Image 1: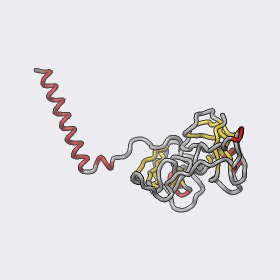
Image 2: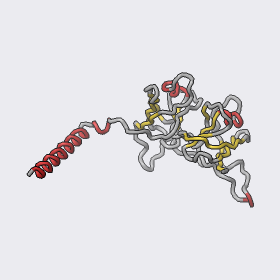
Image 3: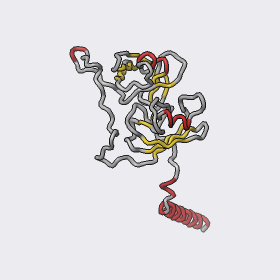
Image 4: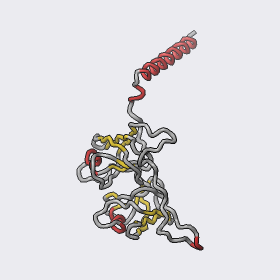
Length: 228
C-alpha cells in the first residue's frame, strides 16, 4: 500500500507541474523568460563604426536584435544587426561604450541573447546576405589552379594585446596558421591562432598594424587562407 501511495503522489505532482507549465505558456511567461546561456562563443570586441549602438554578424541576418551583456559589470546593450562581419557579434563603438569597463577593448565574460526573429525562410533582408568568398588578387595556384578562396567572410578587426602578431578564432584551433591579406593595399601577415574569440579571425594589434591602411581599424576587403 505504501508503494502504491508513492506512485499516486508522484503522478499527482507530475500532472500539477504540467498544468502549471501550460498556464505559464498561455500567459506568455515561457516566451519572456531569459535565454539560457550565450549564442556566441569567445570574446566580444568592436569596430570603429560610428552611429547609434549597433552590431554586425556572420551568424544573424540584418534586422535581428541582440542583447549583449558584460557579465563582469552587469551592463547590457540591445543592438540591431545592420550587416555582415567576420564575427558572431561585432559591436560598433557606441554599443561597446555602453558595456565595456574603462580601458578595456574586449569583453571576455559575456552573454549574447537573441531578441528578434530572423527573416522567414526564402526572404532576404537588405544586408543579410553573407559576402561571397573573395579570390586572392586574381593570381592562380600551383599548376594554374584557381586562386585560393578566403576561409572567412566579412570585415576583419583587432583587439588590444601587447604581443607579437597573432590571432584568435571561433573556427580554427589553437596552433593553426593563417595568412591574412588586405586586398586594398596588398599587405599580408601570417599569424598563429593563440586562443578563442567570437570571430572567424580576430587579429591582435601587432598583426593589424602590419596590414591596415593608415587610420583604418577595419580591413573590409580581405582574404584569409589557412597555411598550417
